[in-house]
Length: 238
Image 1 (cartoon, rainbow, N blue to C red):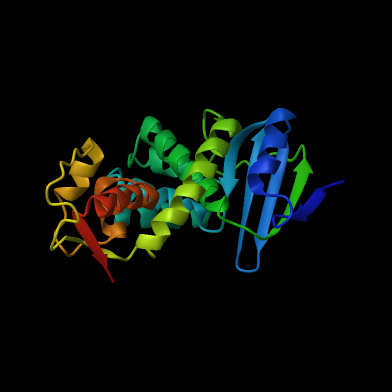
Image 2: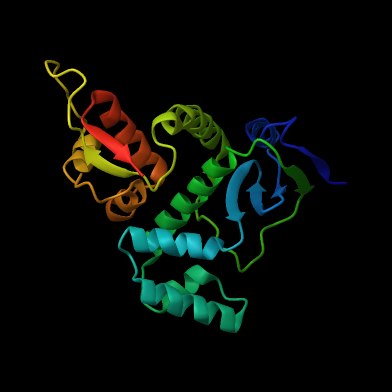
């Protein structure tokens, strides 16, 4: 019998902890009125995440990191819809668009990014179905992910994002050089990532633009820009 409940009363990180500790195998279905996701586990480790248009999410990440072109993505999606049962990743590799190693890295990044987004859900129904494997045509990570690591990073991101959203309400905000420094006499020691973003600030690119060009997820870019905001080096505008 499936275990059902609501994320309002039982948070996702609590449920994932039980799955990991109990070494559970099965699927966890999450539903909101306008969104849904299914996480598949094997003996307490995460092996796949399925969301509507999840193949496009992997494809977009491959484009963002320069592994494939938009035209190659559309061609692979057309082939996948025509045959129906062949894995999307297999088509990309068979067509010579990408190699196995790059595909596996991008799949892992896509799965992690999706899970971190799900941590922001404060409401929604969940249903755990024991011993249900992922569909054979869905992309899976070749190395199952440790749920404990996902929990720690997901909780950290949620806490940090609350602070970030106070200064950067959305990812379409444009980053500009600050007209003034909050502390003109203070020294600023930037990290390598902060330099990579700061050197590209041109008053035209948004958080989303930086993510695409750098091959990062939007959380990573927002976190770096937030640090530059605190230093008084940049500003963000609609």
